[in-house]
Length: 63
Length: 136
Image (cartoon, rainbow over all chains, first blue to last red):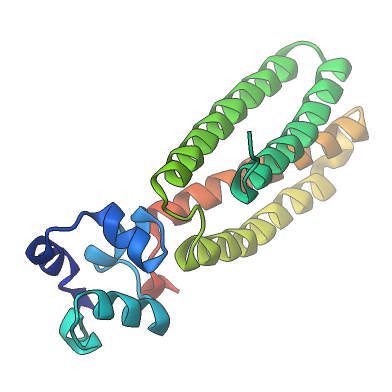
């Protein structure tokens, strides 16, 4: 799985800490998500997608 | 100063680790104050440093408003506990097989507890660094 979190964060101009605080997870979790090394729960994926105002499939890309 | 839930849990974990390692170290040093004692003190100091680092990190996270635990860290804890349990099992099998070679059984038991704890810390560190659900 790949994610567009890093790219979308840059567009919004928010840091990993700010995103982590917004969706209620640790900064490390955002780091792992950006590297594609962690599959989030549906709830977390939804929260992140909602932060960027995009549907889940446009933030998380499954092969 | 208000004691937050996170800080309270940190203090409780610290006291728990300190109690187990402290008691084990004092016990082993008391039985054999030579090589084993030095090794135990080394483990003890290392553990104190690890705990201090962890507490400082938690404090920093709490200050910045980031939660000190989330779904990923909870999964890591569960997974680390699972693997540590089985890894520790091998230590006790080893002790069961070769325990008779040691003069004092209580020293072997105390060492087993310490090795189990060190294993659990090592496993947790490894899983934290390499966590990937696809590796299940």
